[in-house]
Length: 51
Image (cartoon, rainbow, N blue to C red; front, side, top):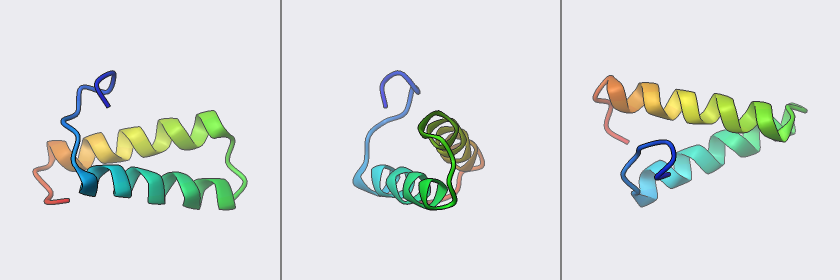
């Protein structure tokens, strides 16, 4: 999370993990799932969404 410049919280970690798991279920590669979920979470935080 430090690389992504995000402050750790349990809620953010759970959201990323849930996203990652869902992407893998849909046959996304590890790299694609990781990239998509990081971007989605960062966008949500930038839009002041409460996680």
